[in-house]
Length: 254
Image (cartoon, rainbow, N blue to C red; front, side, top):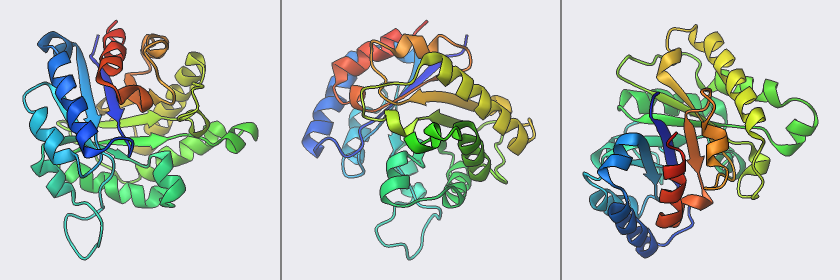
């Protein structure tokens, strides 16, 4: 069985000092055996990223970033270059998180450009998809997710040495304490796989992993990762305290 993937997204929840403290705790708690059993990632805010990178070096914990621009360099004030993220040993790149879509009004056409640039720079995109409560209530969830996947991955070519991750995060579940049911997450993973077949024509399908995100906790992680369709989790609140995050990671090892 392939290793599960568990990525913590710290969002803008911690100060630099708190991020450093949690990174040091992770360094103490992540054993070599655990790092070999699970692909572990952590995505701090941009100002904390250089310091966290130094602390977690050679620990087996892979660094992630919460966004990046769709060009390597240029006149793009306030944006983050993927080249500079690689300088700090970033591995994962979270894209199209629902909070980016909500607050920055980012659409999947722009995300498509970011994915192409990320792959060019050997970053592993973590593409977030998911329906709002209204879309769900109207019965459009599956169609919405198919459209998100197909727009984001149009024209994307994943090379054999690369990977891409899709995180299903129902918008209504994020930060609510109310996760979707594991069977529905499994069903959505199958919808995503069908969308991948359509947009990637099947050729790159094995190179794409699917995670669940949205109020993931140590108490419910096993119910999501025990199905072969879900390869791990994108974790928010439960990743902010190192001990809780490690407990969650341990429970993802089946």
